[in-house]
Length: 260
Image (cartoon, rainbow, N blue to C red):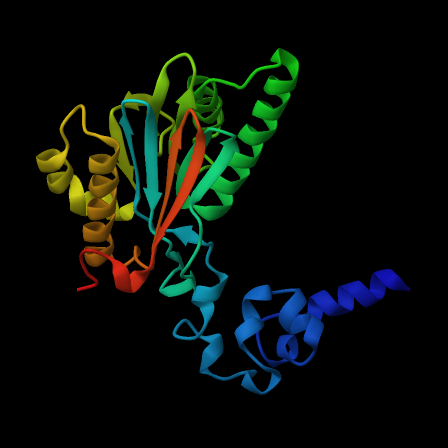
């Protein structure tokens, strides 16, 4: 009974008009067909020049940035999430909390970085319950490193971990694609970061104030967003220190530089 019905549906979902004739064949068996309708069956939309980009994985071609100052850290990111050439989200939040005062900036595959950060949040929750005090930034960074390195063959995840703890204050850790772990005064990542290495080298200096760091992140992100096609939209920032987290937002028409 049921089994035959299911195999019928699957058989029907072979490429071509049959797959498009029912709602189930069209939407459920291939959610990427959400943009197509039954009357599109057998048209050019089925070929490579059609809507196949909707089936690609959501790749967060991105610009992310974090910088530490005396007493805290500032993390920032653009908001563009692309699926091939299609912007699937223009106002996303790439800054994810894994603890009260520890955040990560995500770049690479959206699915991979969300899965990894969910794991780390879960581990840190366990850790906090077991030890009765907030986890250290280095602990979070090491958990990210273990997950990213042990699964390096399957993951595309470039992550920056930043936060504040009472032992060492503000800290920034860079976790590039292969699963390395490097503590840095500042870190950039994502496809847009390549456009602003010169800017960062020229304008970063140790011992900047909170306001200078905020301007540094804002300007860096703006210039990357202006040049990189996979970055853009708005800027989201989080300022993390002993008192907690302050979230900031800069609208796309209020950016100090760009779009070009």
